[in-house]
Image (cartoon, rainbow, N blue to C red; front, side, top):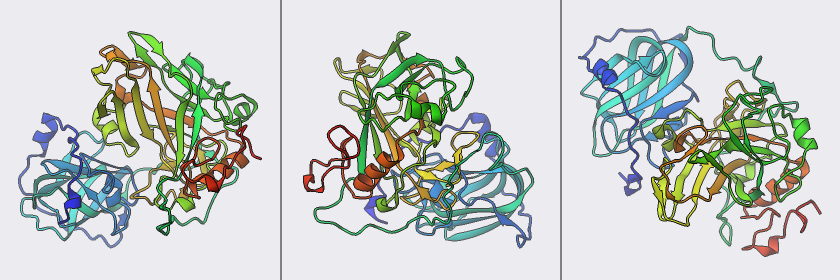
Length: 470
């Protein structure tokens, strides 16, 4: 086992005493099931885990039917890996393909809601390898709950396949809440290529969008609460100067911008930071990175006009924020880094910073979805899933607020620090976004808002000194 398996340790998401008690069961009699007519229900479905090894072993790696990707946990017990099938299903078979680090004692459990769990398989003598388990159960959620590791490492699964028959109505992909793209992108196969080595080495593939606060302390959210002014918690708006509850792509395109690049009329917003109930705004322009979220940065396309989505959730728990595929560094201030809530104290004179990445794989068909997330997905080990095959710009917020010292009364309008989230409503001038994407991201450069890489000045810039196309 390679020493590369040693990674940052993440605490498991808590399991209540009542739930743990409900899972302490003896060996059960397996019910034979003919899985010949069963359907693979778990492919590319949303996944969550109690922990993961840093970066290279996300929960989704066990549900992508790719034998080269996996989920791996921290080196402790208990641990779990969960998949959301999207609707209630009758479960007839589960196939576990373990890496060398396997589960000796574990259960397969189902749940209707992700809270109360029923065990449909239990063993204390697991031997690893590929285990095909004929089971009989039902639920929307299925998880492997491990209580004893077979090695000194964590739990590691190449694949966790759930077979059965859906008994509910699958989520719609058209109808209310779904906004169709006027120019859908079809026939895309996610790139698995590794770009060739360059001299000098290519270390970045990004450009900056530097944007200031444009509207503050406004209880509107044109994505979640469209047409309902005052329905949201307070937001701090950046970029477009006209954003409100009734915002549309047309209104954004007709509006102004507080971004340094005139062609970026995108609306960005996040919960307002409060100190003793008083709003605190970021000072000057903040850095919003546009990057490649996939290994093959040459495959990234500019996101379509009108694409909008929500990153994170105001209802996140600390562990969900900590293990979110888009949480890069969490919060930091002074000498503190990787904080998953606002620190209790920050060095006087320092600033509170947060970094958080957005999903960058698009389904190619929809500009929005009912939960404002389903049309987007995160890459799995650098490759877009087949359900969301189109790699687009990956946005990374890097925000800073002028607060320090005693932080006991510092919070967001949405709640604790781990409730931090943000919204994006793309209204870039398409030719400008395309030029920056091609020159900086596809070209493997570390660009400023002009599309200029100071470390490779011979490559030139995408925009002129006025931040517009030449």
